[in-house]
Figure 1: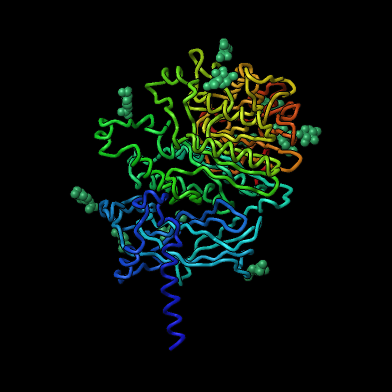
Figure 2: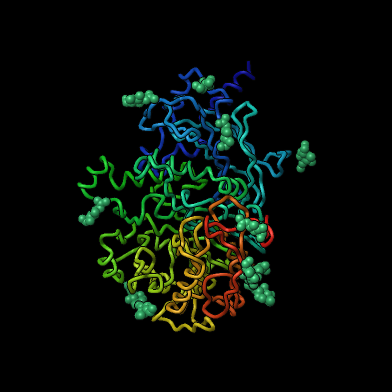
Length: 613
Ligand SMILES: *[C@@H]1O[C@H](CO)[C@@H](O)[C@H](O)[C@H]1NC(C)=O
Ligand SMILES: *[C@@H]1O[C@H](CO)[C@@H](O)[C@H](O)[C@H]1NC(C)=O
Ligand SMILES: *[C@@H]1O[C@H](CO)[C@@H](O)[C@H](O)[C@H]1NC(C)=O
Ligand SMILES: *[C@@H]1O[C@H](CO)[C@@H](O)[C@H](O)[C@H]1NC(C)=O
Ligand SMILES: *[C@@H]1O[C@H](CO)[C@@H](O)[C@H](O)[C@H]1NC(C)=O
Ligand SMILES: *[C@@H]1O[C@H](CO)[C@@H](O)[C@H](O)[C@H]1NC(C)=O
Ligand SMILES: *[C@@H]1O[C@H](CO)[C@@H](O)[C@H](O)[C@H]1NC(C)=O
Ligand SMILES: *[C@@H]1O[C@H](CO)[C@@H](O)[C@H](O)[C@H]1NC(C)=O
Ligand SMILES: *[C@@H]1O[C@H](CO)[C@@H](O)[C@H](O)[C@H]1NC(C)=O
Ligand SMILES: *[C@@H]1O[C@H](CO)[C@@H](O)[C@H](O)[C@H]1NC(C)=O
Ligand SMILES: *[C@@H]1O[C@H](CO)[C@@H](O)[C@H](O)[C@H]1NC(C)=O
């Protein structure tokens, strides 16, 4: 009698715990419970559904992922969906959530049938010691995604994890992840691979695979995740949560991206295209906050569209919701030992003043210096300055700022065919926010701040300076308050043209911008930061081609920042880079052969010339 009772009780507890255990059933915001899923309703519906999936009908098509490492926990992610390759029924709706089969790219009948998955986390690949395990449910309501928090973990430790369809041998790929160190741990070194802007129709995401194959970093940081242009011609303009889910699902079929997610814990934030091009508080270049637009777009408002995008993002990305009361909040921070604080910003979608929308560019250029303009909203801005101060007060050596858009002032004349061109969608359009940031750093003497940036599809390495306000010596770097490392795209287009034409643009750019020490716009790629107490080493890599899936890469440039110096070490890049233009120094181009007919590099030659990981 007694044992049976215990079993019944623990089953009931287990059932409610597993529905809630999948974080994707929760709303991204407490203030918007309607964005979440009514778990009791689904649990009840499931009990009424007598049939269940045959494990053979289910597939872990999109692999596994992990992210947002804390010292004792990490987020684990997978997707387990029915393949149903023969079901060609029309788009059907269940509670406004049509079900899309990403394997066959067809809409399938929504199904109330839940999928049960179990997971385990251990310190070796055989799970000989299990640190955490559990069960979770998923359904079509959340696109069959599973997001759980693995707990009871040890700081700065590598773990392996795996999902399986409950009670079956249908298992996900084996994932690897890592927790962060505790804030007061003495960590000697942390490696980060930094990415931005992948564009699926534009090319293969080789850059993700290269860092995974080298395996020299602890975490992947994406200050500006994806350019996210749908290759799927049926979706030209994204509106619904299904549209956004479908696009992310398509991106997450790239084998090198899957490899990176499987091997590293990611710390990503979105850029503009996760919602819409050039967004701001009240719209984007393709969406006005007007009655006209509302009707034209089939009754979808700016806010609804943002919510659909945000919901799909939280479903698919292995990230935490740090403040449930703030529906668009993705900005958050990570303390990693006494070595560094990583502050991730949202300069894109959160309470941002109007940006360039295509038809108003002259207006934005005219108001760019208005004191009332804000890039992040006052709530986030104040949080940001506080984070910088607190980090400095606690004695963390480095402050790494994961930010989407280029921070430094850029005179773009060299890139423009008709005179000066202001990119007011970057910090250049929000000089009041930039000045407040610089003023905070200078007036509080906050040292060792490193800005990361993406979005621009080109490489920009600069001393962090307040031109026209603070003195700055271009040759020594004196007067600088930090360094900016902005990186090129994984596959989105850069300056275009040939190496020679791109390098000539870079030459003009470093000439017109005193603080810009290296410019490069030809190669697609990424960079790695090896962060130690004494110094940061930045290594930039270029992919010779993204027209094929290949493991080749070229070392483009290396930089050192010594702790306490707040500038790039001289000679910058040791006076020599592979491509682009240096403020002072040479470009020593490797002799590659380009097949001019196909526009691709001769890969046979790479075998001889480059490291193949
Ligand atoms: C499961 O997904 C993998 C990865 O996308 C794919 O290679 C495989 O064909 C799929 N299996 C089925 C039965 O659809
Ligand atoms: C799927 O369709 C093909 C072709 O019509 C058929 O041969 C196959 O048996 C079907 N498979 C299932 C599982 O229904
Ligand atoms: C989908 O719906 C359309 C319009 O009702 C119909 O013409 C078509 O045959 C349907 N397709 C399938 C596969 O049921
Ligand atoms: C894991 O299992 C494999 C094969 O069973 C074995 O060779 C290996 O030694 C095991 N590793 C550990 C860490 O237990
Ligand atoms: C938004 O409004 C502006 C100004 O009226 C107009 O030029 C633009 O075409 C509109 N954009 C859309 C997507 O409707
Ligand atoms: C920011 O500082 C720059 C350089 O000192 C100055 O030109 C610009 O007007 C300032 N902008 C605002 C809004 O204070
Ligand atoms: C930008 O550079 C060009 C030279 O290429 C120069 O004529 C122009 O004055 C510069 N603009 C600013 C704002 O410094
Ligand atoms: C960067 O440093 C690595 C390792 O020291 C070296 O192999 C590579 O050639 C360097 N790259 C450049 C462009 O100097
Ligand atoms: C610059 O060159 C020196 C001496 O050759 C070497 O020790 C150092 O690692 C190089 N630095 C970079 C950033 O490549
Ligand atoms: C570069 O490649 C071309 C064509 O293969 C060859 O003629 C030339 O000698 C090479 N230059 C160097 C410096 O290796
Ligand atoms: C590629 O380079 C190799 C080695 O230089 C050469 O033998 C081969 O003919 C080249 N292939 C093409 C398509 O140019």
